[in-house]
Image (cartoon, rainbow, N blue to C red; front, side, top):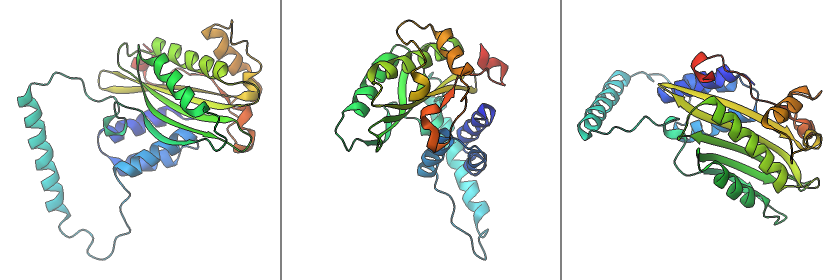
Amino acid sequence: MSKAKLEYARELIKDERYEEARTVLREINHPTAEQWLKKLDALAPPKPSSQKGKYRGCWLVLLGLMLCAFVGYLSSLRSGSQNQPSLAGPLIPAEPTIVEISDPYSTGLPENFLSVASENVAQHGYVSWYEAVINTERRLMANLEVTLTVTPQRSVALQVIADLLRQYAKSTNDQNAGRLEVLVSWQRGTLTCIDNAGVGFLVMREIDWGSATQEAIFRAIDQDIYADGLDGETYGLTAWAPDPSGIRECNL
């Protein structure tokens, strides 16, 4: 996955340049980009095809929006708020956004893992996005996003990713482990940084989760011969470890 493109798309979203962000996300062939597109479409639905006269009055509308934004900005200054800006704009609320929890076999795994994950990251931030489904093979397919707020730095992001992968392995077994994809975001000044990792159950079997260190976990994933196996037919072979960002500040 192009981490740089995801970072660029998130910055565009924060700047409310939604159409440009949508274009960038559509170029990324990865479930995370698809999730962000869903959230973006919910926040700012794509504009319908235009007809003749589509630009009539658009400058007045734009001027009105700019005026509203300026008034809102002045109002926030008067309020004296010292809070830092939202880590991901309006797309990530303070409570988990649960896109889908599908558990037709009543395994309880989607809800149980969300509870475990939320407790696990509470000292660092919060779970900001969760999507999970028990597929026809009765395996838990989960996508998780975490926003760091306490210590927003990459070393903490790597710790959170490794801990969540370990918790997933412990919460499931060889019969119902499927795939977990984790994305962590944090703020460095005005920049929004991200890092992520994923592992499928066939790769998960090769790791000693009880004793493996963080470095050993990432090394095992990186060395797997099926690295970046993202095809839907080979989800069990999914394996990618965190990579350094192209933005220097995000590696601190």
